Image (cartoon, rainbow, N blue to C red; front, top):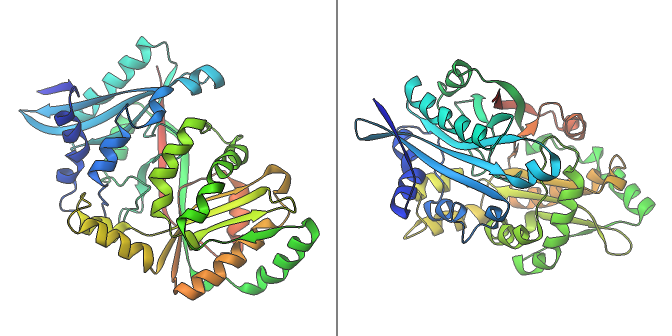
Length: 372
């Protein structure tokens, strides 16, 4: 018999966060989160997303043994401003028992109906900067800091419950040696002269901070037309500054400014923390922080996390400036492999942007939908 329990205290929330550590204890591909960071992201007093969102966390037990978890999420901005009556769910993990996944999904559906929502979709997080999608292909590749990893049996549990595919995301990779400078060096000079643009590089995190709010504004402007986009609010900016910027080598943050020093494009690349996080085993101390700092400074793998271009400058060759700057720093740092975070399958602009680098798709993930 499967019993369901809603998380009611800090101890149970920690059980929610740490459940995957046992589920994936024998996996060489699963990448654990930092437990404290995960707990903070679910803390209503710390994460400002809870100003505009509600979340309830559930644990499933089988004969007193923890066997599954799910977060049921309602984003009021999405519902109220965009009129998308969606019941979100994420952090959905379970043993290979359909009775377990069903009891968790039934609870999500029940909450959705109680709130007069029209459909449920997952796995997704609170916002567009959270992890997204269940892995359906590429299980023999190590996960990353910004994606979920899951067992191959997950997909069948979704379809057996009556879900249909909502969105498909692709993850691509290419050797850094595929970046032929002849494709962007000359165009870099032409675009800068034509539009009065210049690059802005950084050597330390302190230099980046004055630009971060403007960067998030540009992020909102760049991605506003994408499906299910939820803008980052003013209060969330400070939270994301603290959560993400410190993890990024400042040399891997590239800004493009116009003649009036206004930010018109940005790009953020992160070193791969996957192996460091596996060594840390969810803890910063005593050695976890050392592993992460080492990965930040010396890493042969780079992950393209975000690229934003103001709508007025899209399709004008601005990416040539970005690629030229990364070519120089990657050559200096000895970066060998480049990875891209999940991108919507139907995002043709992204495919065009990267086509000259001959990328290969090495992972696919999906969100699933079911009407309520």
